[in-house]
Amino acid sequence: MRRDVAIHAVVPAAGVGARMGAGLPKQYLTLAGRTLAEHTLSRLLAFAPIRQVVVAVAEADPWWPELSVARQPRVTTVHGGDTRAHSVRAGLAEVLARDPDAWVLVHDMARPLLRLSDMQALLDSCAGQDDAQGAILALPVSDTVKQAGPGALIEATLDRALIWRALTPQLFPAAALHDALTGAHAGITDEASAMEAAGWRPRLVPARADNIKVTLPEDLALARFYLEAQRQEGLAWRFA
Image (cartoon, rainbow, N blue to C red; front, side, top):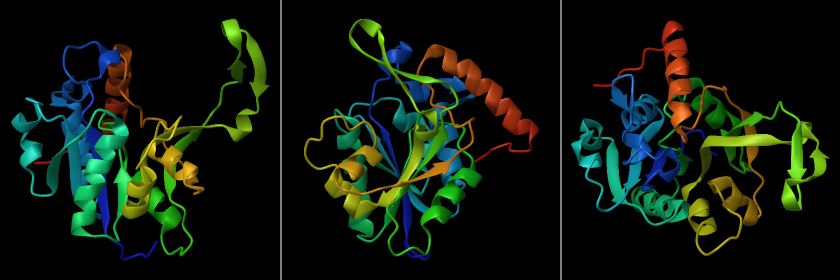
């Protein structure tokens, strides 16, 4: 990845967040007086290397246009699809129309506590490397991990030294990722999975544990705790 390459962000946000059971998509739930979407996008926009943030929302989303961040000059809105892959591809198409050589950070809208230092570490892991295969933020697993068989019986104990939890952002060349997400790939749950299926070997970059994804109702309480801890460290994130 050239050190002067254009960096864009793509944020898929067309899902309904069914597991949250909140009656509206989870990115519009409130955390410390702001929606998760506002927290997340403020952090991406605060990261200087990102030229543009492309947000893929549902076509009939009534909440997104009401947020002031949706009208921020560096934010572009596109319509997402029925799946994460469709939404990411829609965002990538917008990026590629601007710069065919760009690299993208794909980030979950429901991860509102992302640190600038983690984004910088992700870029540094690929910068200046002609053979860079992309990279993702991830956490080594600390628990003992079991593989289940039929009837929820333990089939094997896995070597946790080899197992990491995939987080976001995930960093790849926009064109290569767009190609990798084209067509059906069984078992693909994130962008790295698609790139792996296409023969790439992305790097795992250790992240901070507070980069949590808000998925279940109890995750909001944990997010509040981490947000307050970050503020006490002096990370009082604001964006006009």
